[in-house]
Amino acid sequence: MLINLYLIFSLVFSGLGLSHSAAYFDNLSRRDISPYQKQAPPNLTTFKASNIYPWGIKQTGLEPRVNAKAAIAIDIDNGQTLFSYNEGDKLAMASLTKIMTATIALERINNFNVPVTISRNAALVEGSRMNLWIDEKISLKDVLYGLILKSGNDAAVTLEEYYDNVVRPSITDPSPSFVELMNQKVKDLGLKDMKFEDSSGINENNTTSPKDLVFLMDYAMRNPTFREVMSTPQYTASALNGSLQHPMNTTNRLLKTRTDVLAGKTGYSEAAGYNMITVFKSPAGHRIVTIVFGTEGIDARFNETNKIIDWVYNYYRW
Image (cartoon, rainbow, N blue to C red; front, side, top):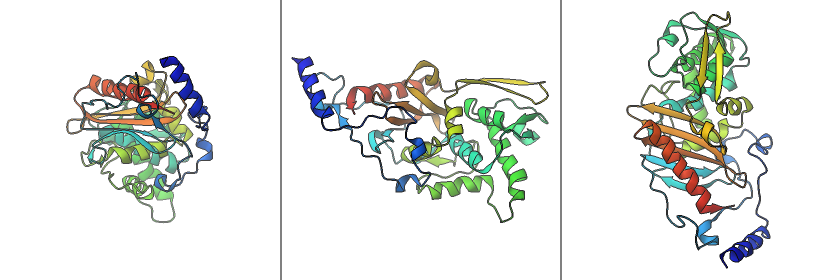
């Protein structure tokens, strides 16, 4: 009887013309790079499983208990919030800052194949690093991979310095600094709860609400180079003279353990706790962004993200 009812409801709702995305990036090229909040969502409908199948669905009607300061899951193909907990709280981003760092670098630096010489300031920066050496010569492309996969603060400082010291002086009109451009992008996207003091996330005044960070991630993922780097599990960067290699594995453990996870970034600081943003694909091909802020351990951010993803699968049908 349960199976028959399932089939009946499936046929009924398929007859209503529910849309199914074929692949994660199918419609990205057709979406303009206009401010996220000014963009009309696609004509898609999401139904809660509790409304369609009010029997037998695991955890139907019960939101997961997420052990974090804040959490959110948004279907960015139709703009619907699937789960939220303290979504409007302004919290320290830590290395999730580097989503904006990569975005500004990709939009303001035209050639990533050019060499850059690593400064003392960049090589000796505190926190997580891709282990660049003073005076090492390396391509900006390799630095970009180190920024995302290794969450390198040295990579963030290198990209910022390259723009401020090389690109910016070549611009005829007065141009904002790299960090000023990060904050200008916040305004351009219409985000209200996000601000930046540095490019790495070391500064605890880099803050955002979970919802604003979802919007930024959606915007950033429209850049094909950003998507490629974010979805890469491992990479080896090399000094241009071949004297040094920097093998790196992504800090995003779920990219290696779940086939439905397409991209993501981790972040940590003492004030922020363990943060994580993840992009995954629903069974119907919708793109869903989840974020957890302030979990209490390295494993916890992955466990809580898994919990939200699995709950979305059980609780929603597209």
